[in-house]
Length: 541
Image (cartoon, rainbow, N blue to C red; front, side, top):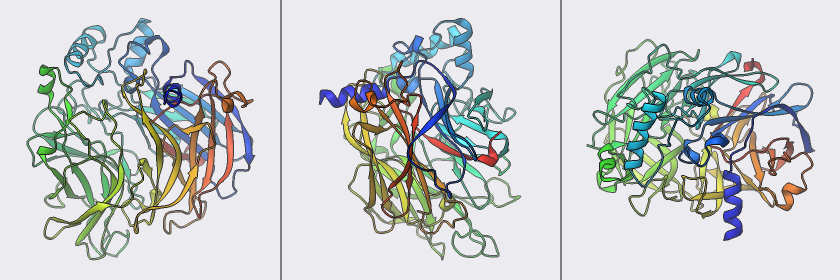
């Protein structure tokens, strides 16, 4: 209805200013003793106010980092800071808009024209917004801000909540500079990196926008250095838009690692699914990304290399045909004890038409594929839960291993138009679901308070001194926001009065029924964002 659409639009509304570290008031409860101290970060698009109506939409907005520090002693603090990318700095120095947006579905000619004009105005065809994901790099508070169509930006997060951009266009001494990776940005890195808790490696998959169809697997070592960058050819003739991947942990010769039997390799799962990228569509005034089920669906099991091995040393990719669909976010994957089967769990959607996800929203559902590595066949695929879900997460210690529980946010309505779009349609999100990844279904659900809606994915933080177990030995940190003018926002004494919205951070105990044990009232508005990360206090600068 109109009331819901008004709330939706207000949650998409960008904030107008940054905010230095400011105390966050405890609303109820107390931070649990077994909740580790550190910082929770949320990344998301936030166009600068001078360019909100002209820049091309919310998805093209400059990355903004929202940070809540839970200190060892003293009060929690909240801050928000724009990521100082190359494009952001150029516009600030020019004191004018330099970039047109690129996510302008359903049309293609405005995209072509925008790329040309961006190049002429800014010597940079596409803006490096770094507005989607986050990758902690270890000590010193180092974090990469990520967006799949540009190079990342390197940030530093300090113990008081100060966030500083250390380097824009961070390319690992030129190793990520590659026009085949992304011709308009000069290089790119996926917004979704998977962390192997056994080896400390971070693994992600990007897709080239030029040349032969492929999947580029990028691996960072435990120390944050780039250790491998390998292109794997796809079987189809169309390039898939590969937004996420999954990993399976292997097991060394002594049986350590937990991913199957002794000496078994792990895998990187490649999603060659028919959300295809065909640049020539732009010449017909169509957006280059469309759903094309006739291109078929395949999942690739690419053997991960061992310590000291060269790229490709693990053997050939095992390609397995599956039903056509779209997967933007995976939950987890693991292999059986004998290594013959790999199980992938993800959020799957089947768009009703060719419109890309930027133009039209398609609900996603928990789905599972069981893949036989010997026969290269999918022996079973099917729905695990009929509840619409978004932005899944789990205990990171179980990434690549069998986990019983995962978590996702629950949309309660779909609507539009979104005047800050694209996306042209959006969702209101009213809760978090605890998912049973073995039996299927929702095991427990947390409902946001009346008038408050979730604005990003939940962040899982393992309990201090715990073992991962089934995957619920931890806490979920959840950002929520109430629209300006609502009774809930007006009643919040610590709200940002110039903005009008009220934001909170809830702490949920993932065990049992997932109840809230504490909440912080934040001094600044937190609008819609995308993905999040946790930095333990010992890793902060």
